[in-house]
Image 1 (cartoon, rainbow, N blue to C red):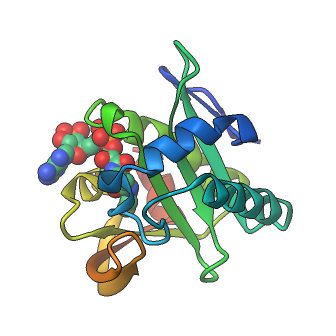
Image 2: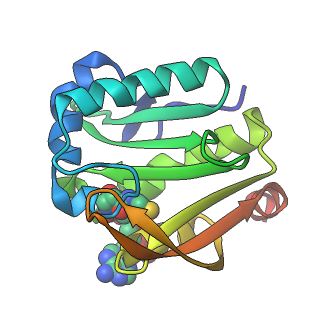
Length: 182
Ligand SMILES: CC(C)(COP(=O)(O)OP(=O)(O)OC[C@H]1O[C@@H](n2cnc3c(N)ncnc32)[C@H](O)[C@@H]1OP(=O)(O)O)[C@@H](O)C(=O)NCCC(=O)NCCS
């Protein structure tokens, strides 16, 4: 097992019912939800319960692993980071963070142990991800992590109720291991 649930500033753990207030508050922010595909706006407690049920069920079935990202210094839930292969056969990597936590390197810091878990414990051959064309901060995070662009597609954003141009990116196990060894 290579997964280390702690980084310099963060602790990653399974999400629980007690996360509901922070989770609903963060995803209830349209500026967060509009950058995600599957998050409706407004985001409600009922949607949180459904999300948690999905997370638990798919973890048991081996098709998803989501981590609540908390701050070591105060235990605050600041976001989520996860892997999901329920939509396609490939592992899709994704994350979101509360607006007040942006721009402090948290997304990149939280992603690193999740990538390590994906490639070294789950033995994923590749991870895919996507970022909306008007969300360059996410593109920057994925670039820093070693993902490269494979193309573009139009996808529906539930919160926007509209299609958005999405950049598709990929990180292969070989590339991850090569960068890790460098
Ligand atoms: C995208 C998101 C996860 C970034 O989180 P974060 O903790 O601020 O990310 P980090 O601080 O680790 O890195 C952000 C990078 O984006 C860069 N960035 C920020 N705004 C940018 C912009 N407008 N254009 C280009 N780069 C930008 C930062 O400079 C930083 O890169 P650097 O370290 O090389 O300077 C966060 O904004 C978020 O949760 N957004 C809403 C949900 C979302 O977009 N999820 C991802 C869906 S693909």
